[in-house]
Length: 137
Image 1 (spheres, rainbow, N blue to C red):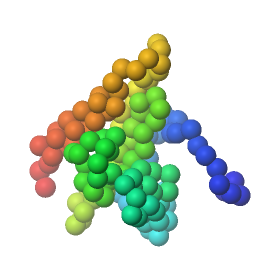
Image 2 (tube, rainbow, N blue to C red):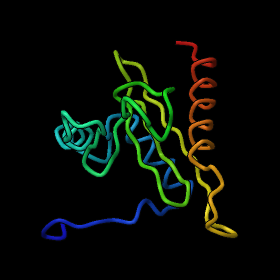
Image 3 (cartoon, one colour):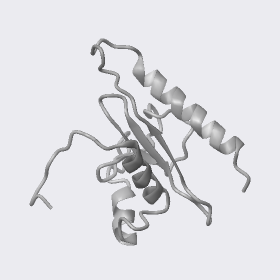
């Protein structure tokens, strides 16, 4: 769209918009992207490297994932400097996918370290555990 390589500063949106994005991504990009476009966006483009990176998204790293170990290997997401996170677990075998949203502001009132990576991992761990516990499929 911009005619070349560009950077971005993250995902800025309201909870309602992040919810809509999460729903679309958990449904395989339905209503948002073509099937081939979605597959290309979520495919790993860093094979052989320790960090799994997709197009604009981070895949579930084998070690040191920002969301811990609760998500499956095909999950992907985006984390932000201010502590935000949108993480998606695609549906498999006809089951619906899931998405998890954490909106925070770790830089207010200061940017002093507050062990936020551990908070983010704990959030995703507990959210995934609750989702699995309530799963009636």
